[in-house]
Length: 227
Image (tube, rainbow, N blue to C red; front, side, top):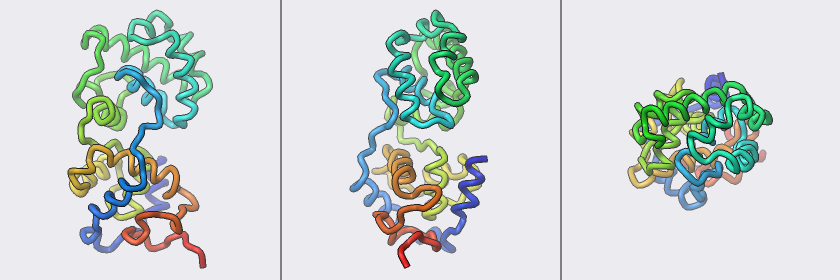
């Protein structure tokens, strides 16, 4: 529903998106945005757990939970020893904590049983883990393994459709269109550029168009500019 709402708010797109200068857009974003993940982590498992916890939750809230959680849990077996009930208590301050705790216990068990306790490096294997969808898998592939893939969250979805980089009704469509248009030199960090631009400038309501570095390239017609 979040993606549909964002699409409805951002659907005023270019009539000819093929003319969009995607290289110029990502050159500008790269010049102004430091592509640093907002989620804290030290290991691939940390990252996977943090991304699972981040669904419909702010990164700030997740970082508060993991700062305490990781004093006790560093390996998959640590989470199993902690157990689902105690994990729920540790995650109670974030949304969907019961479902997330169940998923984390399940994925840690699968990591031990099928992957020697290691986070797998393929999308297909990652998506077999409980609680891991395509977006989560792509974040792990990109950040942990350095693969040039794009994870489409609500920010990436909104910004891409609004600016004219994509014209998709689903995250999968937007991902496919971005992979075709993002210059190769920017693929590694494209996700972070779009996330951070959407979080701090191209917000869902009241986008800061006057200070937007890609304003001249953006195809959104109803820009939020001073009269």
